[in-house]
Image (cartoon, rainbow over all chains, first blue to last red; front, side, top):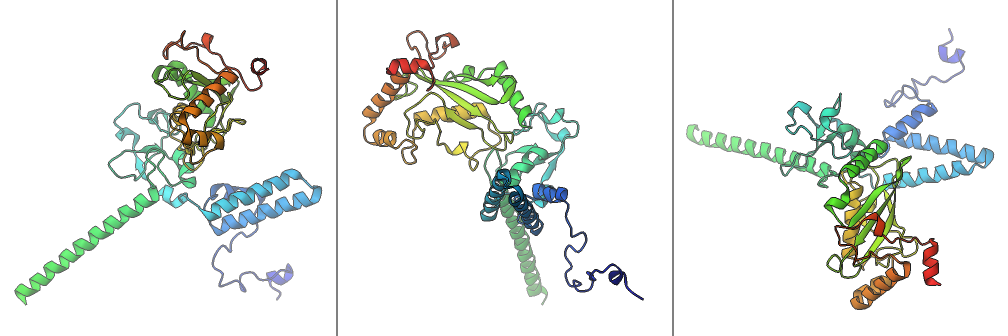
Length: 200
Length: 190
């Protein structure tokens, strides 16, 4: 009996690439989802982004070859420029980081006319507010609409109000917690040793 | 987002003009209400107390805001020519870190930028000059620099009428502003 692959004159993609566990699903990309990945993951060095970038560049290349379009060329150059910048210093934070930012309930904000420093809209005027607090430390309360501070943090990982690098702040916070845990553990084990002295 | 935020700023400036809190800012408004992305501003240094070099002067600035504002800084240029170490005499381009993407913050607004530019007039930074001659003069011969600044202000006619106006009473009627392209300047130079 002939297999599906033979009938359709295609190679069995599942078997030869069995070890390739990543992204075996939908390989071909439509222009719209290339643009989509390009826009949403711009700034992060994910492979899919590199792939989208390549696809866009080659599409533009075709365009400029076909009718010598200047626009395509300029687009290509700007694409490369932005690629270089992203490659050299991707200073922004990842989408995952944004998802883990501390959410703030609008009802818990004491000031009635507190507003987002970026869009300057009052938090309470927003029907569906999604407010986050940045981990700036030093006892400040820097809160923003996630919608506003998200795109900024993806370009630049500093708090717009105090320039604290939120990535570093987060790292320091984690280090502190780890240290505390370690210290607590050490104390525990010391106590245990003492116990041994007494009872051993 | 840019449009909404700009209209909010505009409404706030209409309600409480920046000139109230800072008399050195004479005006700040969109050139026409049809296009909220192109603004103009007039700043001044009315008396010698305000600034030892630029006293008696006032300057017009153009502010071009991008659609990415406030994630990207606006582009601000001097329309009135000014002799300053960090400002290009011909193009009016300003060398100020917070006007660049790296040091800009989306929590700032147009009024903040004008305040920053007024402070740049007070403390030029000759170590990163756009106008090298002005920077050298400023560094080695402050008195000469002052004369140069004042001479240029006279040449382009960018004076505030100090006798008629004190810092708090400058009105639009007694401003004398002439652009680089203005015929009035040519008349003076000729």
